[in-house]
Length: 476
Image (tube, rainbow, N blue to C red; front, side, top):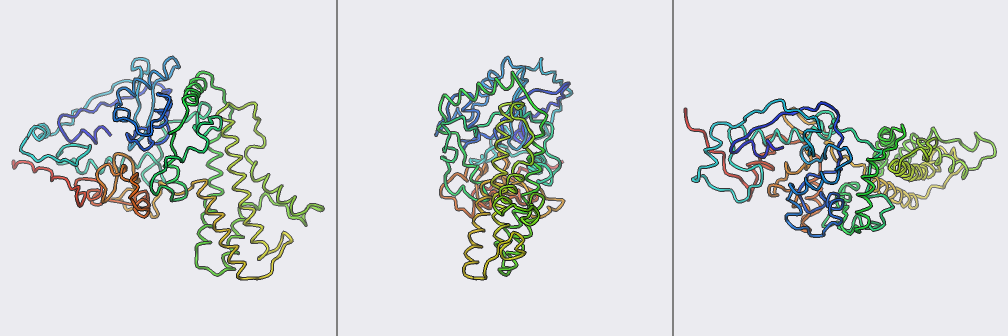
């Protein structure tokens, strides 16, 4: 990232480092290295300052030097090496170089002929709209800008079609602290209080972008900070593979629910829609179902309760709560809550569609097309509400496989592809005047190549944000 910002102007030296042991670092989730007033710094402001201002001062956002000192003071005495945060790249703040064991391998002077001269040449026109990366650059600066975007796609994994996810950071969920913890009462009902404009689209992704910590009490902020330090100092962890459980739940439910949602929105015949919903909901639940005629004396209501219970607790029924850390107990209850709603909704769809198809549950319904259409609309809304709640949209996956000269791009500050927006276009999406369709397009993952990026993110941005051409090199 630093190379992308400063590598095309003045003198540039890049240092290559290596670790000699695993580093213990704190990870602030989300794009926590994004310097905006729209929520990206909320967690750091809350933990470090005890509050989140609705309108933070300029230095509160951009004074990274002071923030670095405060973060290192936070982890002082806990045998923590530093802090890792993300924007278009991952950055690690080392709090004690000597203790970290990080070694310097070599330094490369990347300054190209002409860089210094261009920087000092007062005859060149100034660019009033330009935000970093600054300057006119050199023969490689335009391609380097696109390469910065390409490297950003590596960090969200194969879904971004750029390579594996950033696996150097291995999360320790035993020490996790979440602002969604219901113990922090001052945030009850306030997570979405700072949504502005049309930020409630795309299966919850826009909605979650509006989740803020504005309004957190000083007491809760101090409690979070205290809990973080306690978790790090006294880590007690089970052997439960929480990440694998969550991935398995998403794998088993997501594609089928998306298929059901798409079926409801299709132009198929009414009976084709019902049959397809029946097949898909049964595919999810069939390993948990005992039909009434299989188990003598068990009625439909009992079958429903048993099916939902088995489906909801399949991954947690044998986990002993007393063996879990506080963070793990939060994950335990969260998984049970999510699965309970998923399984209950899927059972609702199965029981409804059974009446018009196989009728294996012992229920049937007369054909009343008017009523059936009302029921279809009701079930469509039920599924839509569920998907919005879990937020399983494809926020980092393009709809098609990108060509070899393209990357699957999402807005990753400060390398933002946003035709019609100024450089740093991520700020513009908080404008209440921005239309919902523009916002949907802004956040939609899309395949772009170098030419696209030059027009919508680089020096060729148009119409009012076009940058001056790179000065040509003198003939040799």
